[in-house]
Length: 115
Image (cartoon, rainbow, N blue to C red):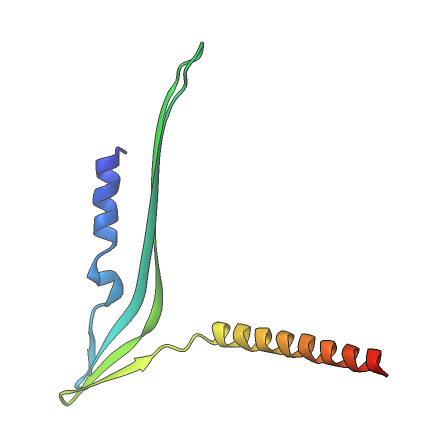
């Protein structure tokens, strides 16, 4: 695959269809899923000098999507319902707990030294 083919595939991968899914309609209610889309790419080239001359090339591209929520359309009224990432909430709570424990430990140690 050459670089132009890779760029073409990257352009096709990063479309609005990745961020907004196909609308789903049931009983007069339309739901449009939404996601945060991010991507990145890289390339390479090579040419060795000296006795063994070789050539090379390379490249890559990646796209990731994280659900953010849905738009719900009912009777002409549009509402946003965010997706809740429980893993992120739990991780944040653990970080706060560790910081609190370290702070309490430091306070207890200072008071013990003063006594």
